[in-house]
Length: 198
Image (tube, rainbow, N blue to C red; front, side, top):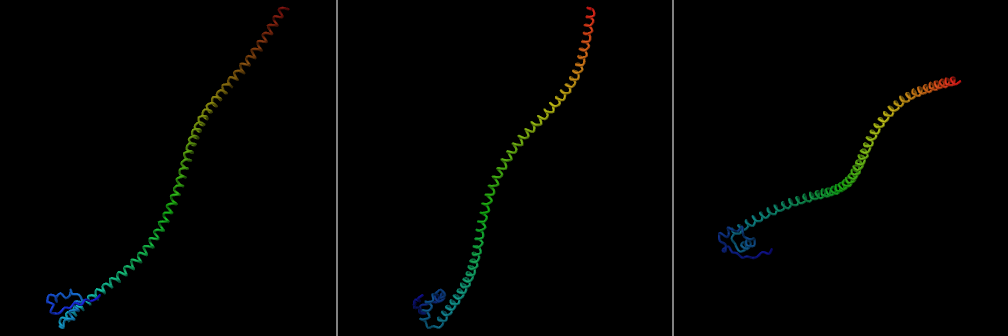
């Protein structure tokens, strides 16, 4: 920055203006020093310049410390971001893996649903078959019951038939006896009739 040459003489300065020297620009102070021969003005300017220099050094040190702190924080954040980036990559990979697992589980779920549907249909068919078999079994039980009744009736009929057969045999014997007796009587009667004729 080029320094403007502002020519200021000590006679130009009032007490109030000298009191505000800390608000002056450095070129203005140098101009004052150049134009004045009074040592007290020079000493005052020198003190102010030294104070400003010290203040500037402190500010520079503060800025350096802030810069170092910022650099440290920046590096720390950069490393942290790198860590986050690694974590993000891992999360993305896990997400992809999980999506794959979810897709696989959906497929397995569909297969299981199909199997469940097929099993339900088979179960319904078997239930119908069991129902039909139960009805047939019930029918078989009824037929067996009727068969038992018929067998009982048959046995009863056979028993009655046996009784009738025995009675018939007895009647047959009696008829035979009667026929024999009748024939004998007829023969005797014929014999008597022949004797009478003779």
